[in-house]
Amino acid sequence: MSMAEFKGKVKNIQDTPFGYTVSVIGGKWKMVIIYLLAENQTVRFNDLKRQIGAITYKTLSSQLKELEADGLVNRREYPQVPPKVEYSLTDKAVTLLPVLEGLCEWGVKNQYN
Image (cartoon, rainbow, N blue to C red; front, side, top):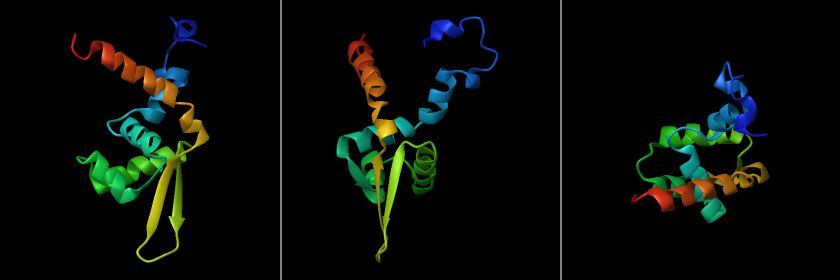
């Protein structure tokens, strides 16, 4: 299925596969989080926060919850003091990595043009 199949038929972008994809990975931080989890396999909350830098704890928490609800992030909590929580990508998220790789390649070709 491609964008061409929807040409002239789109009444609401959310009803298309493109709209769904954008709703799942859209926003300022979701692709950054997915990228970092892909690079590091499993990451603790504070390590993610430290690697991203400019994100607030509240925003990171809400973005991770949304990614988890969409089936892209696994959250593993360890019953200990202090609490330890680790995040990793699901198999579903791994299928998105070629798409993100394509965006990266586009950036390489066009960043300085």
